[in-house]
Amino acid sequence: MPDSNRRDNHDRRRTPGTCGCHTTSVDPAAEAVHEAMPPAASETLTLALANASHEPLGATEPYGEDDGVVRMIVAEQAFAVLLLGNTLKTIPVLQINYLG
Image 1 (cartoon, rainbow, N blue to C red):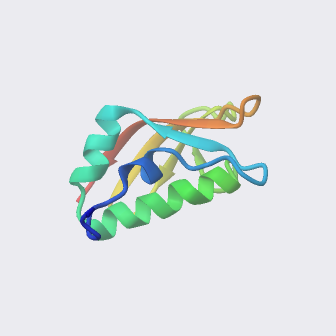
Image 2: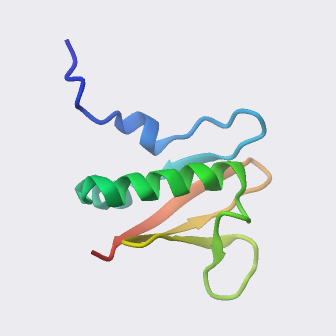
């Protein structure tokens, strides 16, 4: 019987692309940082990533020059660097930094 307190890593790494949403995928090194974060900071970032899958440009900020592709999510204790792939509706998360 699975432990009910165990995090479901599959759900965090890939957000299904339903209803026109983008699908997120997380680099293994970035996932390791996300897993090591305190629960509150991790949850905040997870929710921000989920928002980005529904509204990629509105839920993210430009990373450097605004080319509409390389974006970031800035949360209180973390930030993530990601790419917006509008053709395939994908959002690969390249980097996660914990600031706490």
